[in-house]
Image (cartoon, rainbow, N blue to C red; front, side):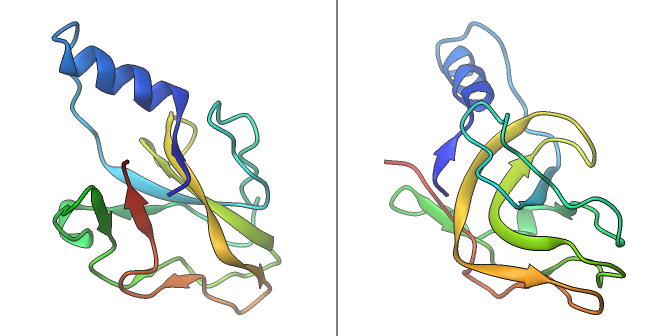
Amino acid sequence: MGSFSNYAENKILDHIVGKTSYTMPTAYIALSTADPTDAGTGLTEPVGGAYARKATTGADWAAAASGATSNATVLSFPQATGSWGTITHFALMDAATAGNMIGHGALTASKVISTGDTATFSIGDLDITLD
């Protein structure tokens, strides 16, 4: 993953120093046709065409090791019933719609999603790292 969002950085820091408690809700994967940026202002999700964020659970992710984790299961979105455009980035969100961006990253290769396509991430395709 390219970067934690400004929102997540602040929540984690407040949690670590005991300022407030933070419990991560369900993590949703969002697709974007633009770089979301750390502020989340560039997140441009597909509209219509059966697009919906993909909910994940702890079982969908490998245990972190050496400051990194990746998806432990195949993660598939609904089949597109219309064009979603050229997907260039992904983001982790804390809600099925709206909500806060936790982090974001660029895809290794952009992917055009057209009617009948299914956006799928094979095991290990989504990497999240901290350094």
